[in-house]
Image (cartoon, rainbow, N blue to C red; front, side, top):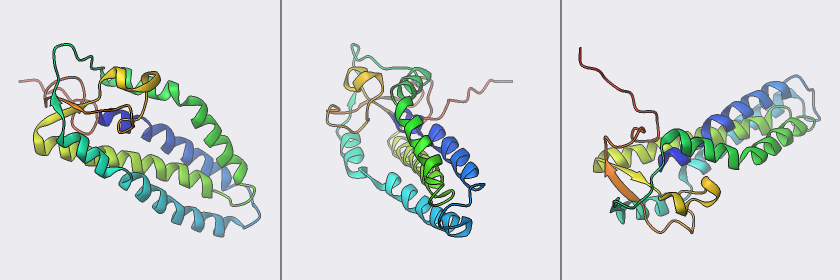
Length: 184
């Protein structure tokens, strides 16, 4: 489940960094200094908002999680991330173009907001990973509850989470790629 949250972090971060970097070369209406300082403040606000939004819903769904059954369909980490990115590619492109266009008014500010949203998603996935480690389970969302193969892990369609052992699947707690250790 944290994989779905984490899937948008990297694209938002990199698109935001590129848009902010490109915006730094445009003088803009407010000037580079005001745009960059305003963008830095908005970066912090966006990261905090994305990190803290819907924590109660995530916590409630995690508490009510049931053990995954034999007939529950659970996806691999790579498939989930790919589906999220495909389902949101046009929104990501529009956000990137809007951030580039807004550099004419406030250089680098909108790009820094995009980067802040990416950092916020990464922080939320790390928080979910701490919940998973505390209970020693991995939280999953059934594939049929994710709309269009990507979805929202705390949306209305999600009735409850499923749990498996911490070693199940190819994702570590928090949605990161599992690192395999070999005995030497």
